[in-house]
Length: 425
View 1 (cartoon, one colour):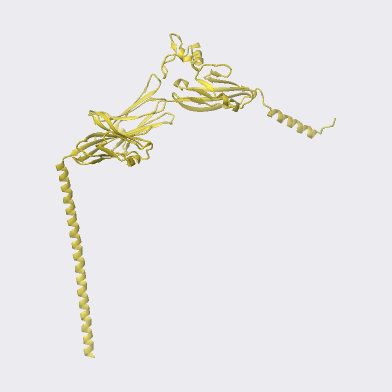
View 2: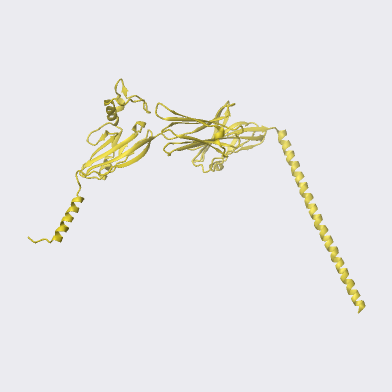
């Protein structure tokens, strides 16, 4: 047997040690990976879980320590949680947002456990994807989930923190009926509790208007928010904006309201202005007329399609090209027949801009008097301009005449000097 040198033996021992460390251990455990995701209420949600594939894996999902999925046995999600909570009498179920009480007469309701809301993407297990599909998320699904994988490489584990959000889907701003001068901003069915704030254009300290906000938690677990704001006596020219922001910052919705007065002349055509906020995209425009205190919509426009639906085509007209660019001004054929209060509303998925327009008309005599007044003003201005031009012309002519006379005198003096010179010679 050949003799191995001490140096070679040392190298062999080192290589063997390194090879031992590179071997997979059947008891190895990968570090835990934490992920936080947010899913929308009543939608399907995917809880991510990746692992190193090797052989046939045993996959188990837990929520708060309770098994909700096991690859070797079917564990209906709701039943596993209910049985666990009922065993220690530590949980009392209130009505879920989807309705129904699972404790029907002291036993589990049939409908609650009849369907399995969890499943894996089995065709992707070979690639190391053990993500869990959770169908129709409810507020009860919030919490800490653990994905545990056991295979020939050992145990692998990751944790997912699931947040369920009911986003802010709409905000409305309404004007309280007279004599109360208040605006009311409302939004409902939100989770978690949102934030509400007021602003104005042009800017004005809102502390002087004393906004009052109230948050209410409904039985479903969702929140409703309502805020009132005192307004100035003269609302014309000001825009009040109410913004509702979700707690996770993923959803922001706003609504605004402004008011203006427009005066037209009886029997004449008139344009009622209404402009969208800057950079508004994919909006709908609607015009309504107030009848007995209720708005009656007579015109709709969609910026997506460019189509106009006009029920008052014989009385009003909207330019689709201008409306597409955010100018929703309405042209009336006869202001006398159309006086009253109009509402112009620009709406998107997360905003609503509303303008109240009070159209008043003045008589033909008043219109004629205004026309006569303008004629008088124009005539006076024209006369003043004419007088100024005449005065300027006269001054210029006088200067020219003086210059011409001085020139003649100079020539006469030169002639006299010439004559005297000739006489002396």
